[in-house]
Image (cartoon, rainbow, N blue to C red; front, side, top):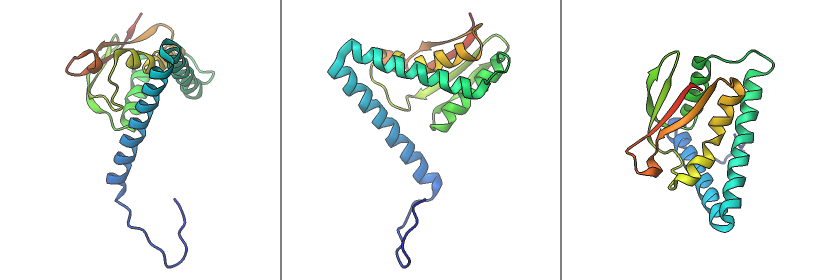
Length: 158
């Protein structure tokens, strides 16, 4: 929080109002940056987004797993659900089993408008899953940018 001088006050929205607005704004800014990179640099820009996203996923996995054993599908699914919840993603878990976890996302939190940017962005989740347990994979079976009514993010054995 920013400390204000004595006698100065600023009306702030309650956290349950201000935080979701701020998250939406930041996610929109990420999308705008992706689009600007892609518009200016084409496939090289897309490769850059993909590379940075993968590195980010691997960093998260290394912090979460450390030197521990490979994670179970439920542990990985729980982490992805927490990540999505942290950015106020609207969706639901449709499958939660030992061979498949499916997360339905009703509205893209960014919102990404092209499949190319969606694939480059979600390479974060792919790298995260691979680093937590190479026996599993993360795929997108449905995608809003592909004109599906919702996204379907799937974690399953390879």
